[in-house]
Image 1: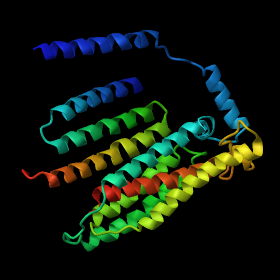
Image 2 (image 1 turned 45 degrees about the horizontal axis):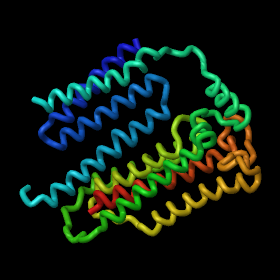
Image 3 (image 1 turned 180 degrees about the vertical axis):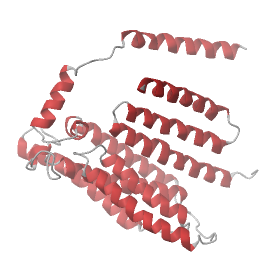
Image 4 (image 1 turned 30 degrees about the vertical axis):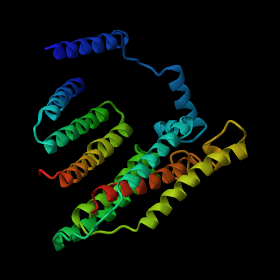
Length: 82
Length: 227
């Protein structure tokens, strides 16, 4: 049962990774990359590694996404064509 | 066309590289020699309930010190590159509701973070996770109230003091226990198994790591988004 859930989550992760490359909007790509980390943390939890799952959820899907969004905001502010 | 062929060749090479891992992979029913040693030692010698924590802080303590150093360097780099220039623009103030709720949640998130790194030797989690949670609480303040100002002097003092005490605790082990015991947590009495005060210096070290990570990430978030 758990392996089926892990396989489904892995397939969703691959789809999200593919979308992160192919999205035209950078914000969507960032959020898609955050979804990968969130699902990875769920998989870690299912594999009985709660320590790694907490780190991944907090740093991978929370902080990294936020820092990317802040950076995107800064980069757009400096762009004269925008 | 030639680019695609090269991409396919690179992918094929990667697959060939990782194929042996897939072939030799098998599930273990029992722990290996080293893991058994870690589990037994962390329970018998260190009185630590969470084996992961005792591995991270004690047996691989030097790696943790390295990680903290890397984070410190990253913060220094961000602080050097992103100096604040002008903070003149004054966006509209956020609503009363948002401010009150964020202040209420701020305290709760800070308390959860402190709980996580103080109980690092008993429950999952530890300094890094708790520190990130604390930084997230400050992030909530940044997002809810765009005019918030942090006292950078306090942040820097907390960061440098926790880093210094972390290294000093490690050096204390050298001084008290002999040459091969850098970052040995047995310099503090071990306490009783499963209680808050147990596992020697591990909760102290993890609290210091948590404070350091929290203040560093708060500095990064403030530098990146707080203008």
